[in-house]
Image 1 (cartoon, rainbow, N blue to C red):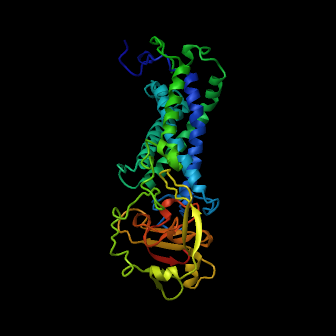
Image 2 (tube, rainbow, N blue to C red):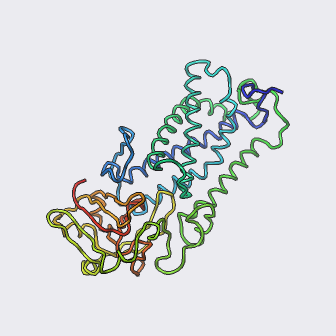
Image 3 (cartoon, rainbow, N blue to C red):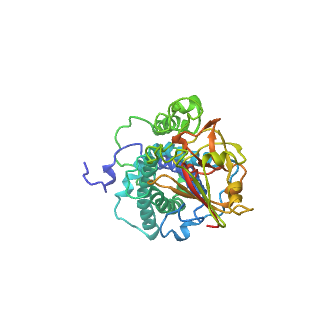
Amino acid sequence: MPRSPSSPAFWRSPLRHPWFTSVLGIVLLGGITVMFVTGLLSYAAYNPGLSPVNDMTPDKGLLGFYLFSWPTGPHWLYRLTQGVHVTLGVTLIPVLLAKLWSVVPKLFALPPARSLAHALERVSLLLLVGGALFEFTTGVLNVQLDYLFPGSFYPLHFYGAWVFFAAFVTHAVLRVPTAVRNLRHLRDELPPEASELVSPDPAEPTVSRRGALGFVGGGSLLLFATTAGRSFDGPVRETALLAPHGGPEPGSGPSAFQINKTARSRGISATETSAEAWRLVVEGRGRPVRLSRDELLQLPLHSAALPIACVEGWSTSDQHWRGVRLRDLARLVGYERAPDVLVESLQRHGAFRRAALRDNQVRDPDSLLALFVNGAPLTPDHGFPARIIVPAAPGVLNTKWVARMTFGDL
């Protein structure tokens, strides 16, 4: 028996075959392309050019491009794009692992490079494998709210995505024509010597290649069925057994919908949010305005039905919010046409204590400083005394426990 992984006979599984690898590769080609596009949309949703507070990626250069200010309609836009991004990523995990297993002999093949094209393919393969494992691992940890990686998830996933996608595009350009040719043949029409994936001394098969593909597809379907429900409400959410925001709603009543951060975890005390202590400071042209919650209640109040949608892929259905329009607050401090706004929270630690909103978000009639939800005052965990709610914005930009708002061009 050969002892070296560089020997083709070392890898004896009869499942490895160009047809098997090509089917998995075509699935990943479509799936990862959708993931990359929705990932770019998620990046754009933060309006990264607006202010450094929204995008703290160092030295991003041309990689930090975005083509448009994130729109406020349809109001479920971010719920859709990020739900697809995360759910598809989780669903593709078995396909990715099967694809990596199917090509592992190529990682040990000698000589390392037989030509310039082969060298490019080998380098792209190494970057592709490393980038895929990094992106999928950090993505799953973020979805599970397990921040075990060093540094911030945001720049790590951002740079990892570009490395991975560059290798993915290079590898696809080099290998897609071959994959398409392989798919045109029946499984057994290619001779074993035609591919370094096929073992010259295969073991006895215990399952067919189609059966193996069915097993991989079943694993993906199981992950989809136990993850996708967290983007919905009611009984469907209870099917999301593998997601932190799956299962039944947390309690009952008008405020029984999902949250990420509790007031206690952010160090928000009842004393500082009391009617005696809390004041909203609104700044703009001229002298700042300080408003108590009772004074906010004297301003014109408006209602909007909007969901909460987070970068981890979970979301709620439309909740019914009531509060003061952001553009009306801008008018209080001298702006007839509302500009950008920097929103600051009472919380003292954690990401997005400060968040910026683009002027088109501020001007939208459904963008509110919310004081009520579903007919009841906000609870502490939902942002009492006041929180931001903006159509189609990522959850982290809907700042809770608002303390200060500064209007002006950012």
